[in-house]
Image (cartoon, rainbow, N blue to C red; front, side, top):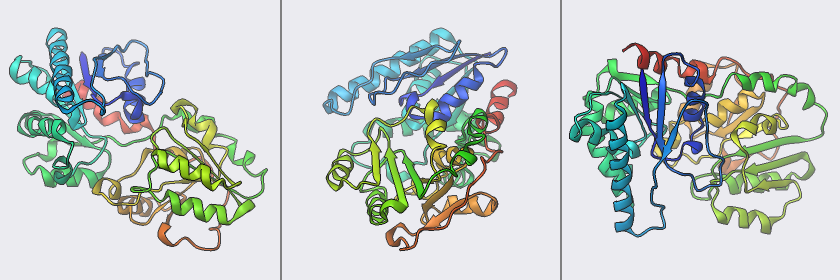
Length: 371
């Protein structure tokens, strides 16, 4: 069986996709090809044995509007022609940004492939109307008029987001809907074994935040200011490749001795080795969009798998519901706008099992192979 995955946004930015591809690579009888674009974040290119990743040129954000539109159309046409030549049995379109190529393949080139759709993020109707989203609106139009209606599988990362998608698209049938959560590989648990004992040999609380940071969308200013005020009682480390430059500049000027940072981020494969050196992982989204409010970030499950406690903003209601469903998990909601003077008490945690990429992708893989 031939599976084509169309992932216009750079694969390397989305660990759930690369985790699944690594797993699918070992599936007997499944031949996979992926279409994506180059990342410009300095991340190492994703590679998996036996899975070609075709990367056609795609225009960057610094291009003029006409050049960007032309590059957008060219990328999707070239991918559609590739699909036509390869004739896959299944096309999995990931994120609305990818939808035009499968639509061209199906509608203009008369492709007969089965269609599946997945979104890593939740996009509200208002998101598509924002300035600068013209090409995404084009994709959304064909996704809604064709792909959703003919898809065998339409998935989101958690139930709340799936419910929102179903509300926005009332023509979707319950039989089409599925979940593909953002979980790390089972191998992370094995790598985290023994880390709890190692973390006992230090003084103070070690806190880490890995991921996107900006003053507009995250509480980075609040947590750094709070940590700096506690001096040697806390060691805070921040790293990420998708961080606004003014955040790094502010951190350099602040020069707090107990706050370290790494603008180069950390390769995904090396994250377990980094995370297991800390006690607490932070999620800092302000909850100023529905996507943030209804999010169970992959960084949460990754931290739990490495034996860390996770602090997250109380605005993230879906994460609170997840915590209530799993009261045994070390998840703590905080009011980042009004952090307590006293440092919250934490204890050494064991790596959390039961949330793996293997289990998360099982329903999708079954649908691909058996529909």
